[in-house]
Image (cartoon, rainbow, N blue to C red; front, side, top):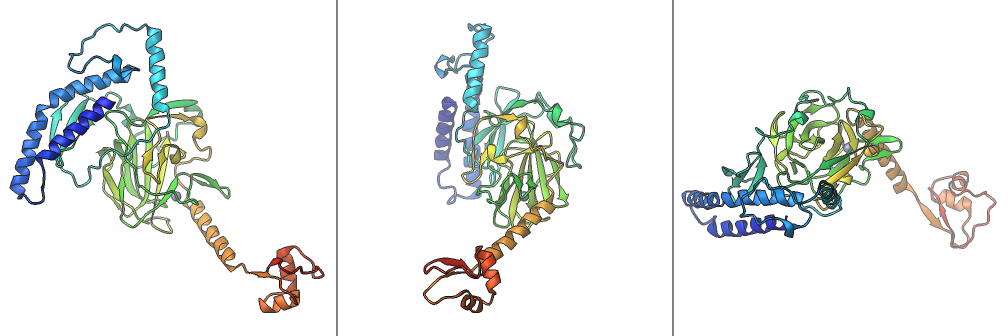
Amino acid sequence: MKKYLLLFAALSLASAATARNPRKTSRAARLQAAEAAADSLRAVTTRQAAVIDSLQCIAVCPEEEECAPAEEPRRAEPDPRTPEQIAADSVADMRRRMERKEIRSTFDTESLTVIDTLDSGNEALYVVLFSDNSWKYVRNREVAKDSTIFEKYWDTKSLFPYSSVTKADIPESVVVTLVDSASGFHYPYKGAVNPRGKFGLRRGRRHQGVDLPLRMRDTIYATFCGRVRISQTVRGYGNLVIIRHDNGLETYYGHLAERLVEPNQWVEAGEVIGLGGSTGRSTGPHLHFETRYYGQSFDPERLIDFKRGILNREVFLLKRSFLSIYSNAGQDFDDEEANEKQDKQEAAERAAMRYHKIRSGDTLGHLAVKYGTTVKRICALNGIKPTTTLRIGRTLRVR
Ligand SMILES: [Zn+2]
């Protein structure tokens, strides 16, 4: 992976040098510079093909040093390892990829235009060049092997196409690849989860996702690459986008002010899919974000550190026990609203509380008059009797 990153950095530096001071040049000159950059990058596609080969090599080699140099043509040479060794190595590699690490968002494609699309030497991938001379690998959907994910249970109208799937049909645990060389990550929105909007039960009411407070019309990004399944106005959710990803997960983006994608559209991680808002049953601008597998919700904070905008690991072991046993087709926004109402009521009660520190000469009768209440009420609030001796310095709740 290091090799890949180094080459990427070198390419970015080289191309940045050719497009210095873009603001001062005319549009024609900028276009010329972009074309020149595209030409020079086109020349390195053969090298990129070699990089892809070496990436594939890294994917199976536990040690980078053991990999063949990238220049060597790839042949079907017999693997010197025994099948047991290969299996052990791949388990070790999987373990390494499951470890907790910090994965930052891949670069944004917002405000960038695509200059050119190039062959990568691998028919499943191609290289896209952007107007800032950056580039990235994109999966070629025409030859994508496992398209069943986007065919089975595919419904662009109904929120929940999995009604025939029971929880028993879902394996005990499943390995979910979150990022690899061709599929990146981008935070949906960078901001702390509302402490009252976490996943799970609160006061016996279920919350199927996390609530991320935002400013109206803040940008919302696709978390992983995939295909838009739902883009419509849904009761409760307001403007809702659901994306199904290559790894089988689905992500939900609710309460959007605006939806910027259509059903069946392919999206890359980091593509702008909408603007944050407060549509549907929402008491203030926030993103209601859900992660689901076969329609069953699990805590998105298992995947993403929203405050820092970071993905927690490359590969995620999704256990059936993570899935909400209360999960259903969607969020019940009656629940969310009831909690919100109760929060407000409790906050108002807390704000109305008054305390009094006993001074010499204070009696319960005096306090009742002073705070416009009764002796009986003060006694009830503090668990005391009207005959209780008031110690000087003691604090009593009076309202
Ligand atoms: Zn919510």
